[in-house]
Amino acid sequence: MTNSPTILVFDSGLGGLTVLREVVAARSDAHFVYVADDAFFPYGHHSEDEIIARVVPLMGELIGTHDPDLVVIACNTASTLVLSHLRAAYSVPFVGTVPAIKPACAQSRTRRVSVLGTKGTVKREYTKALIRDFAQGCEVTLVGSPELASLAEAALGGASVSDNDILAELAPCFVGDAEDAGARTDTVVLACTHYPLLLDRMKKLAPWPVDWIDPAPAIARRVSDLLGARSGDIAQAGAEMIFTSNRVHGLSATLTPFFGGRALA
Ligand code: DGL
Image: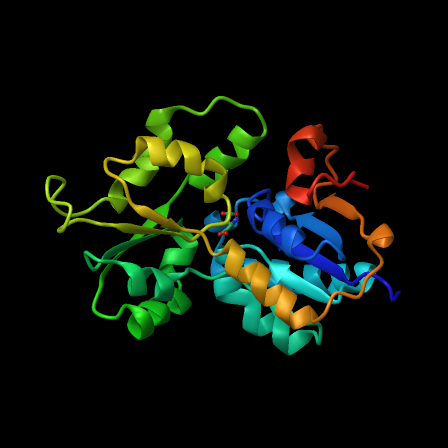
């Protein structure tokens, strides 16, 4: 048996866990290092220059320390900005997380799609280019949410988050004639990895039913394709969780399911 491949999964906080759980399910042979850059959370509130200046050197340090075979940038706010910089700077393969506008527009029957992301992600030229290239005639509404990532993070940490606070962030996604199922939004792209953490509540609060597009399963397939055949020794396939703030988290019971039940180092 050869060594387990090491996959480093990176986000500004805990949202990337929604990508991690799919990758773990697809690659039980891999060793996982999850890095939450919580010292700089939320990325959605930082300028483009600040995010590039933060993530590119930090990734160099993480690659130096953990020597990953592949890195997943499990953050739309970062991926839509830094992927090209990371690929230019480091030779390790990167898989990004970007708004799933193409599949959403391909499947929408009412031709009305909303993209729910951080304020940073919806402003990006990258996101606008995806709409230009892949909207396929759909009317795409960009919804930049200031607080939903922080609300998701708080809810996962056990804090109480009100329905009203979630609904205030969600409501602008629902456009068109509420009374006419053929003339209103039918598809919402979850363009921030934190949002699937609140999906059950968002489904309950939505003014009408829609399809929610989470790119995590597609990312897991891409990671698996890039790594190739399973080769690792499952006995070496552990999991580590790193917070850049160095905080000691008390969340093991909450977090281990995202790691497929592995004990966290
Ligand atoms: N999880 C990040 C994303 O996918 C965003 C959260 C933040 O603002 O840091 O965009």
